[in-house]
Image (cartoon, rainbow, N blue to C red; front, top):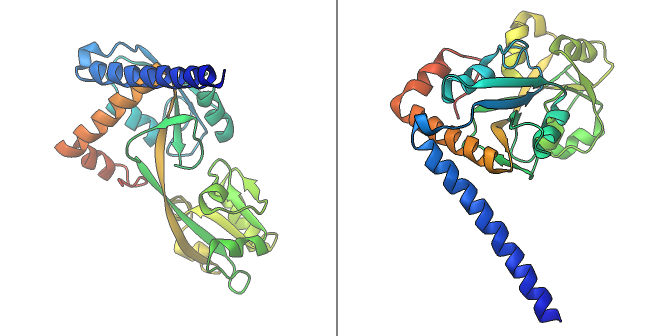
Length: 253
């Protein structure tokens, strides 16, 4: 009896591997020629990040999507909380989630290469915060930008406040209501100049590579293969470097 069970399990595993292999084979075949790209619409799920993903299909991330996929694609974009966007693509209610880090989901296909790097920094008042390693965060009350999940990236288990905008996070630190603000460095510097932060310290912690997440189905495999191929092609011909130079808020890994 155990032999039959073992045989059935091996057959199921083999069938699963064959399906996944055929999906990627179909994706590679489709992406070999632009006219053969048969997907006419792409459903994107994303949080709203000013300058990167904004309503009415605006923002650098959305511009990059439109650059690398064929013209004529109909993009449907759902704006909701970041955790909800991940769940939508995991459950195959959408095709693509933007701005996901490597450790945030094991139920998605990720782009072969990251397309941006978050510059994670900590903002604090002098004498209020001392940081040497991630474990030190457990001793402090923190605030983070909503939808960035830097606690996962840094392995922080301490509960944190979330704020919808950078100014609120800075004000909470300045008022002494929290000890430190985990924030994307380039975004903070784009909002406030050095003089406006003169009474605080800003320390870079780590760079967090950011990926595109695709649904784990045949459509997702096709979209991933196309994205990876075009990203590599545009990297080699110099078009991608030029595009990033025109979008200084983004980092080409």
